[in-house]
Image 1 (cartoon, protein in one colour):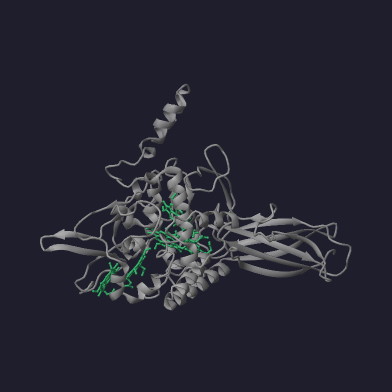
Image 2 (tube, helix red, strand yellow; image 1 turned 45 degrees about the horizontal axis):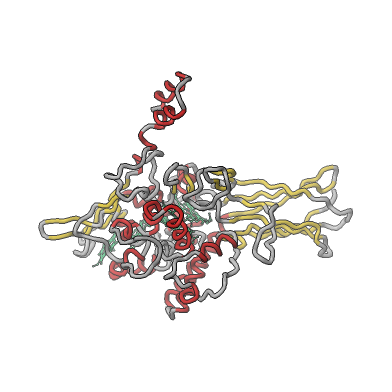
Length: 486
Ligand code: HEC
Ligand code: HEC
Ligand code: HEC
Ligand code: HEC
Ligand code: HEC
């Protein structure tokens, strides 16, 4: 294909349209509807008499995995009110046929069975509402990532095969990471070894989101990981996200893979906000067990955020006077960019205050105002998405390029220099600096919560009678003394 493109360029006079069609070739065509009936989601479904099993059923024999998965972001992937608000907006903007791309990752079973017709949670089956439930991973017989435009998994390119028909009736098949032992599945399911479960490529099917039409990578956790030192050393997503906190630290610092028995089904990342909301909802519903479960997950998410990064602060002198404060922001333990995924929505930024010894403020930057807004000069590590007309865009169906990509690469760092005009004082200055994180700008989160479908009553379910102040987690806080002159 490369030589073909070269050939056409060599002709010089060939029209742009011909060049695009011939040069990009078959791969940019719309997915073949016979092969991908759920496009733009690339899910495939091997339908048989053996359908999907609700997670509660799996939990009867696998109580530990069930308890760990319950209240996880995967269990909440469809119910998540922030998601439901955005899905509602997507359906209104581009219609349900295209918004099915979203559902393909947020509730794959709901899509392939045709049950999900759009946003909303009422009247749905257990499996559909359970989002990324047990069967969404353990019915995966393979993926078709090798035939996508980038030849990598993306946009739900999973093959779901929950079972098969036999002369004796339907049989459930569950795919797992290990060679099955005698009696595996207790006559409820047969067991098949699936090497994919040990690899990042299982996760990549959903953790690589490309635009439904232009194919621009919009959420690229998998691609970022693939280019990282972790991928080189074979440390997969599972080795940090399917283990407890201490094991995650060990994976990140020593690149030693966890052993069987150390894996957990927490799928814990950064999203402390949704755990906090779910805890509120569980308390309101009188479910103390779920409230305690998601509270633990909230604490784990905060702990992960606080272990992900570090700051180094140092003075820069010119003519023996303090001229700049240098801040090095390091991505210590995230196996991908920091932040990753929705980099045009997530906010990681520096807040700094410089005071003299009497407490008089000499300079300040990155402080959130009373309305929760960040000042325009705040140093954010994020990206800026753009729509077709080169206008600023945040919605995944609109973003087709990025004006700026400024997240911190895995095991990498970014340096920031703040100019200061130091006072003539002799006493040292006190520099208080923080690296802060929140899920979204307050206005964006409020707009999404405000757009939830009618059957999600935020007051009745979550006890939200007004839009909440978006919580902020301090990932790193440091206080450093600095001489104003040498
Ligand atoms: C290829 C799979 C995939 C597709 C397609 C997809 N998503 Fe997601 N979505 C994800 C993953 C994975 C995350 C979690 C990323 C993170 O937390 O950083 C996510 C997170 C989100 C969030 C953030 C939720 C929160 O609580 O902060 C919203 C909102 C969202 N998706 C909406 C959508 C909408 C609307 C669409 C369709 C236009 C869509 N997604 C399409 C996989 C997908
Ligand atoms: C997002 C994908 C995903 C979901 C959802 C998921 N699992 Fe898993 N599961 C995995 C992966 C990956 C492994 C392999 C981890 C490892 O290497 O041990 C695994 C391992 C297992 C194992 C084998 C453990 C062992 O050591 O023998 C069982 C049993 C299991 N899962 C059951 C469940 C049940 C029950 C649920 C739902 C409550 C569930 N899983 C949900 C991905 C998933
Ligand atoms: C009647 C009990 C029973 C039910 C219900 C059940 N399993 Fe199992 N499963 C077992 C037994 C027993 C094993 C083998 C021992 C073990 O790994 O716990 C097993 C093993 C597994 C494995 C590990 C396979 C491997 O060796 O890699 C996976 C994955 C799994 N089950 C997934 C599921 C899922 C998903 C469900 C729900 C759709 C489910 N199971 C429902 C009994 C059950
Ligand atoms: C079927 C699609 C699918 C698969 C497969 C999948 N995920 Fe996810 N994952 C999602 C979606 C969708 C979300 C976001 C839910 C939301 O924000 O509402 C998510 C959320 C997460 C989060 C939480 C992010 C946060 O902000 O806290 C982590 C961590 C995660 N996934 C890890 C994994 C790992 C590890 C694997 C592979 C073992 C995996 N996922 C496989 C769809 C998937
Ligand atoms: C070396 C450990 C490590 C590996 C490997 C790793 N992660 Fe993470 N991940 C983290 C840490 C730490 C965070 C929390 C900081 C952050 O948000 O980036 C995180 C956050 C996330 C988030 C939430 C991002 C947000 O801000 O909303 C998602 C989604 C995620 N990881 C998915 C994955 C997937 C998918 C893979 C594999 C392709 C992977 N991770 C590999 C450590 C790791």
